[in-house]
Length: 406
Image 1 (cartoon, rainbow, N blue to C red):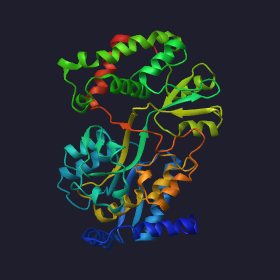
Image 2 (image 1 turned 90 degrees about the vertical axis):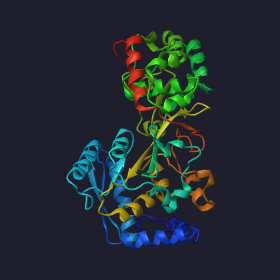
Image 3 (image 1 turned 180 degrees about the vertical axis):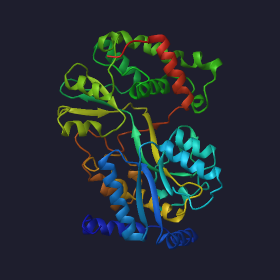
Image 4 (image 1 turned 120 degrees about the horizontal axis):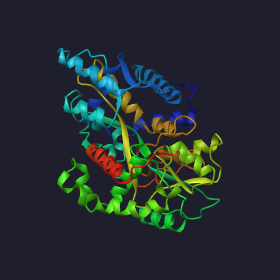
């Protein structure tokens, strides 16, 4: 660890632990630290990306050196298999000594664990000392996972958010709203498009358009009401009816995916593409996939985003060690390192603007790459609709516009 940290950074880390107020909560946390020392945490997390695996290994070394907690990365290809493992343990009465101590999770897998009462007691996440830095105001998805309240049963780890890309060599001022995007498409036919749903990126664009057009966004937090769906989505499909004739290839064909959109942007066939990773454009510039003049933007009212988390199963054999690791993943140092596009490029869940000066400086001086927006400029993250809306939107889109993908 000492080889990885500069003296200044180590001093900042030391400062983080002196910032916590002296209280009964501190005493409780000290009890957690005492119980955690010597524990081994089996962290079940997707293992398909070398740079993410390397980051987890770094964090594991940090926690072992700082707290005497050993973390073993159990690489998985599908988080649903972890849910099944914990469910199987519960079904045979294994209420302690489980094989999973911490799991990287969000969305339907979290909902399944919560519904089946497979998670540790509510509230542990908010009791972590570094929870105080989490941006619960501007990033509401740190508290609600695909419309399901987290209730402190999972701790936020990173953010995903829709960002649009444009080439400054061809476009001076990108559209700042969905209406402005429609106006741009009408004035510049064939210069924008989106992948055909149910491609993930195409469905994400539908969700963004839905959030910007529906009269009452509160209905999106509940399952679809079939009797109301047509009326509620009429503004969305009116928007798409207007947009499609002006899309790339007049909406008769669609880009395959995000990579195809980047290619069309690089080849000057489109002026605007988009991604769900704010660091994608910077990475594409570095590897020569996009020209260095490409930048990103978001709508003024925000873009759809979500959060990914870590959660502790109810029968974890190292619950204190899992809390210590989760707390470390929330620390400004760990979050800053994870946001570095050269390491991972995953946006922080913290409120950078409100961090103490020393910790804020870690982020302010970070090079996010030429096309990555700062956390402040990423704007509000609009919450994901209830999963039932996705199915209903995709089916309606296919019925209305069904066309072969390009």
